[in-house]
Image 1 (tube, one colour):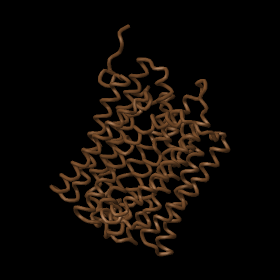
Image 2 (cartoon, one colour):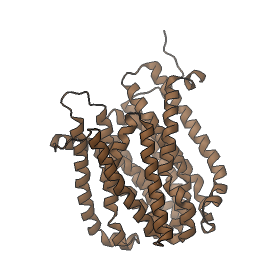
Image 3 (cartoon, rainbow, N blue to C red):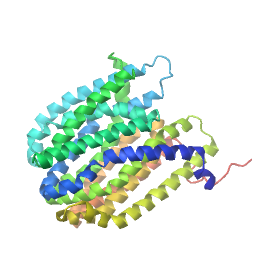
Image 4 (cartoon, rainbow, N blue to C red):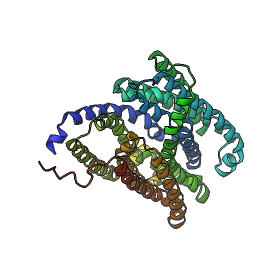
Length: 431
């Protein structure tokens, strides 16, 4: 154990993890950082409305990307292959993003009644959702390339700048201009547009984008990316579905309480996401030249991570009620009941990210589609059943159970596509 923890691999991953955690935490903690302001300015029902908007944005962001970010990430490691033009590949990824953006605008218009009546969301503000999706899809490409190039410092600068701008603009429009919850939407939208242009500038400056439409590259990106859309939807739908069910079965105020609790619990998700950003490039490099000893070491490190994230989550759950009382307005103290279920759900998501990387590496992304379909169906069943039985807390319980099922299923599939000594790592090969 001591030799593993002191290895050069762990030291490199730990250094990158520290930098990525700082950047990732600052950016993805935007809802957490805005809690002290929003929960003192907005009512629970208004916060529930905002949470519904953000939940829809999360789903649309996945569809707008169409897996292009992941396809470009994997394509980066194929640059040495003859006949492969990475710069053209990136441009065609953006072409796909633009095409999906146009289709999403049509979909928003066609679904006007569903958005306005079923989800209680004003149609005028919903028109911004496809734009937010396009901007996020495009600027995440250069951001992710900084990760795979192992450049955490410029990545961190961009992410933290993104965070400061979105938080500042949101506070200005919500508090000082007095727009209420739509002010948060305006702050988010303006920030995404600014970073869209920053992302394009980076791609052009670094010669990572060359204008040339290629049907071959578009097909390759979609073939790799579409299954990932289902995979990613498996996560965002789990996070969003509970809010939609609470809207219809309990009310907007319950959605507001649940969303506040989930926002605090999501801090676990920030850390597991940061670790995966640091871990993924190192894992891919080593899977290209595997040995039995290396496989055993990777499995041991994975189990150490499982233990660490579960232990850290347990400690976080113990201190989170006190943290919640400091962070939010007194009208939202009831949100504490959701924390434990959602926090351990995020811990299971972190465990999931450690095993799903083997499927990404082997390009067996069709398995992610199957897992996502099962996950979404289970989540709908769990939410409806548990909310009916247990009230609003059922949404948090459904989140935990769905993440548990998702982790177990993807761990099974990863063992099929890339066998690892998950249950025999302690055995040494005979001389």
